Image 1 (cartoon, rainbow, N blue to C red):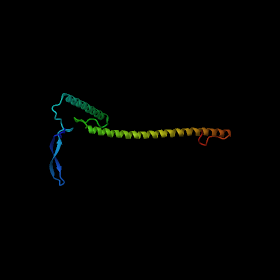
Image 2 (cartoon, helix red, strand yellow; image 1 turned 135 degrees about the vertical axis):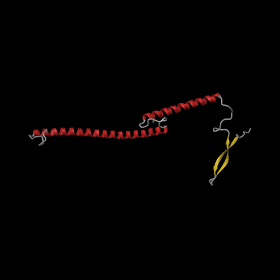
Image 3 (cartoon, rainbow, N blue to C red; image 1 turned 60 degrees about the vertical axis):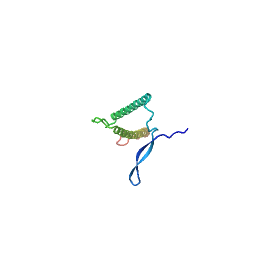
Image 4 (cartoon, rainbow, N blue to C red; image 1 turned 120 degrees about the vertical axis):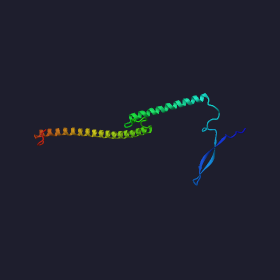
Length: 160
């Protein structure tokens, strides 16, 4: 048994010639396939139900996306809705949100660097404080030795 080829329907398509002129050419397009409607007859209720369910799911998805965009517009600085009816565009809100996230990342980076510098300075301060305590102790020992030998342990003009 041989299978008959699918029916074809000619469709005119413009074709640009090398000389720049336009010629009309017939291109054959099958009447079946994923890009063509089925010619089997009216839709069955099951298909209608599936289509309606799909449309509802898609509508909910769009609503969620729109709600998140509205939330973004409320928390992003300088992105509040305008006094106009439609407010800021979705693209404008998303653009400002991206800019704001970049600013926050840069600010966070600067704060991390500042924190590291503060921690380094704190460690340096602790080290210097420890050295100062050691030098005070050493100074006290040396003064005590001077007093044992009968010498005054305070420098002139700086009594301690």
